[in-house]
Length: 321
Image (tube, rainbow, N blue to C red):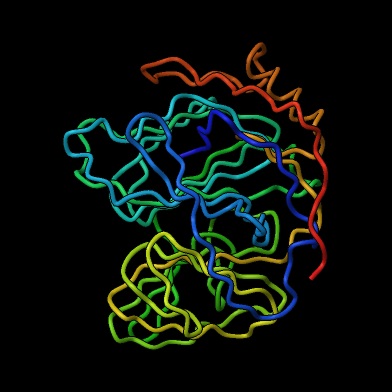
């Protein structure tokens, strides 16, 4: 599920202005965003006061939605640049098509990783027929300047490494955790992991003190460093931690997101990540009137037009904390 917001705002993210250099417990509440006629997502990043977590720049949590008698996910072809999309499901399936000719069905606990690099376009849809429930997260990773114009490519990994402890299974989606490394290509020091925590289980997850972290609650109820987190919320944890205490109040599904604080300031608008407003303006023009992003073949419908750019110029904001 990409950003289909028809009133997308330009924002400056990254840099160390929002990074907290010590452990904190900052509970983020989502912004509810309607995508199309029937789908609503809970947007956790970018969030008021919290723009990025490491290189993670965008987090939407959706479902579980009953789509038994509905079309389900229907996201028309649209462009990306300067980022990676991470598709992660707990229930349901998503059919991915892109302008490289990729055609893959992503299933629960499989990694769909699309590196847009300089330019790519793709669509996402529920297969026909499809499962009754759809539940997952769509995340973006900002590419650093040295790699943001790489050739676009798509990876689909069905076998991912795990880290286990009594009552806890951590599947490493991207980057590395406790010696286990995802096969997905990462361009910055980063970690993304899916945590399955059993009711009553208590565990301490090893962390890198140089990373900043957050935990997204997907399902159930858990305590993260003593703080209750409920589905659709995210707890920002700051930096400086060597371990993270977890407790399952019920069976719970969580996502651990972390990485070295992203040094560069980026400009993010709609489905583009750039460095200047001029780059964003040019990318919009190229999508509407050019062939830079290629064409998605096989999707039954028209491509998504870009929203209008706001008239207000960008102003960097934030302060070192």
